[in-house]
Every structure is written in C-alpha cells, then in structure tokens.
Amino acid sequence: MRILVLNGPNLNLLGRREPDVYGNVSLKGLASELMLVAPDDVELTFVQSNHEGALLDALHEAFDYEGVIFNAGAYTHTSIALRDAIAAISAPVVEVHISNVHARESFRHESKLAAVCLGVISGFGLTSYTLALHALIEHWRNRHD
Ligand code: DQA
Image (cartoon, rainbow, N blue to C red; front, side, top):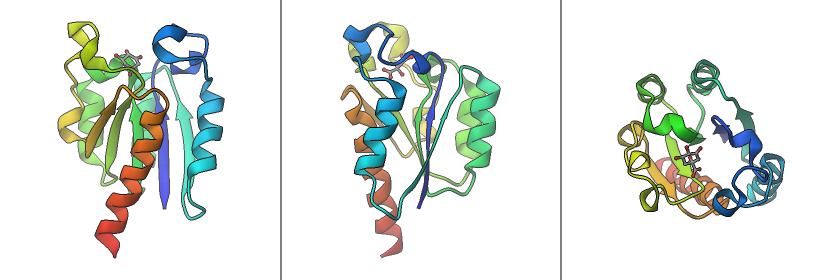
C-alpha cells in the first residue's frame, strides 16, 4: 500500500510554530512516529510544501496511490484548485488537522476540501495523522478482503 502524507503551508514550522496550538513535535518527529506505527506493507511518502502548485503536483503524482493523508493548512479554507485535484485523483484522501478547527476562528470552520475527501479528522494533535493512517488501511482492507 502506498500512502502519501502531504503537508501544506507553515507545517514545516511544526514544533516551533504556536506550540500551544500545534504542540512541540517537529515534522520530522511526526514522520518518525508514523513510520513506527505503519505496518510493513505500507510505504509512506512524505511531502511538505508552502506552495499551492507543488501540493497539486504531489496529489497528481499520487493519482493511483491507496491513500493520501492531507493537512492542507490554511489552503483547506480557500483552495478550489486543491479540491478539484482531490476530486480528480482516484486515491482516497483523508483531510487532517492537528487542531480542532471547529473550536477556532469562524473562517476555519469551512473546508473547501472536505466534501471530496473520504473523511475528516481534526483536533487530536499529531494523533490525527495516525488515526487517518488506520482509517485508510481499514478502507483499503474493506475493499480488498
Ligand atoms: C491546521 C488548521 C488550519 O486552519 C491552519 O491554517 C493550519 C493548520 C491544523 O492542522 O490544525 O495551518 O490545518
């Protein structure tokens, strides 16, 4: 199983950025944690970019992957281009957020992406990513058993 873990703008600053909201584990730390919990038959690819176009390219490259875990950061709330890319590819995408976006400013309550994603996980810190990984594995197993 190939799974892309895609992180958008400002998430390269994880661990240093607003630690009261996003915690103090770095993006590298997150990657190590995910690699530790992923079963042997899951191949994880990690991409982070602050640029919308690079995120689009990464989604296109994962066209027929078995899953994408996507934290689009602030683009979640604005990007129709990313929504169209998620709808275009055949890989199921799980939208993740570290913080509970619904408990924050009202502009974070709307997601342009959620409706074309398999599901949304928000508010569990870095555990949001491990939950998404388990959700994608279950989804894949349910379709192939
Ligand atoms: C975020 C929530 C977004 O609203 C914000 O713009 C981010 C991070 C999260 O993981 O909680 O950059 O996606």
